[in-house]
Image (cartoon, rainbow, N blue to C red; front, top):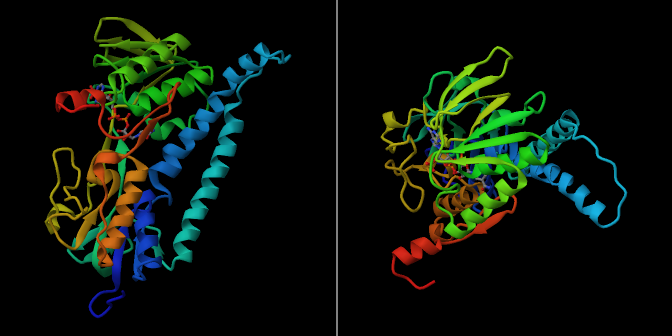
Length: 369
Ligand code: NDP
């Protein structure tokens, strides 16, 4: 496919997460394009380094306390043991390094040229690296992902976000989790399973907004039944350091209590700042996300955007599918993602999985289900 008459590369990908790496590999491998990728942090992105993968390993770790109880019920004579967080962290960090290496080798093996540094747009066909070098590309793909956000309240920086959980030096004895989405509910279950006393505040009527009503209620009841103090219709109003080094929290219902840690799971924001996007004509949406059409193309025809930076659903498999589609598209094939059937799983206890519309959405649309 390579059409190198005018450009250094056929495709320059900014961001080495699930979506960016997939697009680069497919374009270089199957479509035979000349491809470069820039990544300022670690290859693998949110999913591999600070999201799905470490989270899922924590899910596995958190289920053993139940298994011990089950084993006892089946006649095993087992003693209670403690979860050793630093030991787990060591294993976790080794596994993440292994996976990061796999990602790098996949890129190298596909002939993708790697630049391990930050990149931004200089114009519709030019990428500028942080070391000052510039490269031109026929197509540029922005796959810079997103980052967790804290609510806008005083002292919010006393709380942690999902990126921080995996690096905690010790597991807290008590934690307050704010939010009712994927991250809040998954970590409420994980941390409870690891022996942490978990309180969760969710400002709305029921957790997991957007999922099937019956499933939401089932998960909420199961979480409460396991001993998670899930408080619906409640939000954090104030927070401050207390005399013992914990965090004193006042809720919107007027209750006051101290927690060792406060964890904000209050959504994620696209990484679009300082990228030179608006200056080259790429349109941004209300939440800073890159506005794209059904083919991941931005307002500037040579620039595409995929994954979390292009807005929800923020799911790694969606980003990967979009990456494949963009690689196919620039190779002249009709790459396209079917946004109506993106499956999702929430790793609560019990886990829930869904695909397509909810019962409520079908009823509202007057459709049979
Ligand atoms: P979500 O958007 O899923 O949930 C954010 C939650 O925080 C909502 O309950 C929201 O309430 C609440 N919230 C937002 N702002 C505030 C605020 N200022 N004060 C109090 N509460 C607030 O985001 P997450 O952070 O849980 O996860 C981000 C994304 O990451 C998810 O959307 C998902 O795409 C992805 N993810 C996927 C996973 C998976 O596939 N298993 C696992 C983890 C993350 P309200 O509902 O009222 O808006």
